[in-house]
Image 1 (spheres, rainbow, N blue to C red):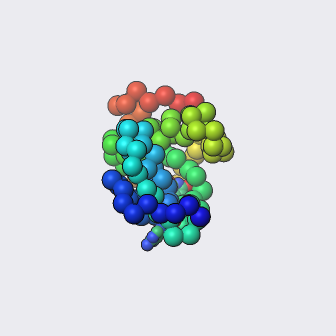
Image 2: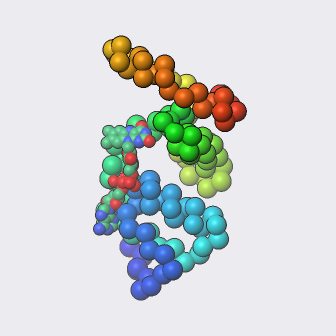
Length: 120
Ligand SMILES: Cc1cc2nc3c(=O)[nH]c(=O)nc-3n(C[C@H](O)[C@H](O)[C@H](O)COP(=O)(O)OP(=O)(O)OC[C@H]3O[C@@H](n4cnc5c(N)ncnc54)[C@H](O)[C@@H]3O)c2cc1C
């Protein structure tokens, strides 16, 4: 194992998707002195269990924009880093198991119209 630096400008605790994302974005912004500490293996926590779904229509406009940004980023990460992600862009279908959920789905905001969202 590489020795751990005694100090750094930024120390991120936890190498799940959030910690890795913070490290990635800080270094992309030009920060060089960033250390990520993971107690076991990268992505061994909750991230390891995730199905990898990046649903595009979220409850708020900002969450929807974030999901859109994320899927665009995942689609280009392999080209940028050489690290394969296995990310595939498919559609999805929301199934309403009862009338309440059906009403909820019908009432969901139509962010694609608001954000000029592109479907692939
Ligand atoms: C079954 C399941 C399916 C899911 N499917 C999806 C999905 O399809 N799409 C989606 O967007 N989300 C999904 N999620 C949610 C998603 O997995 C989590 O929101 C996300 O992984 C959380 O990431 P995290 O980095 O916050 O936490 P974690 O992935 O848990 O990362 C925390 C890391 O910190 C480390 N750590 C803890 N304490 C310390 C310490 N003291 N020192 C050093 N390291 C430490 C842990 O070892 C771990 O690696 C799913 C979750 C589950 C359980």
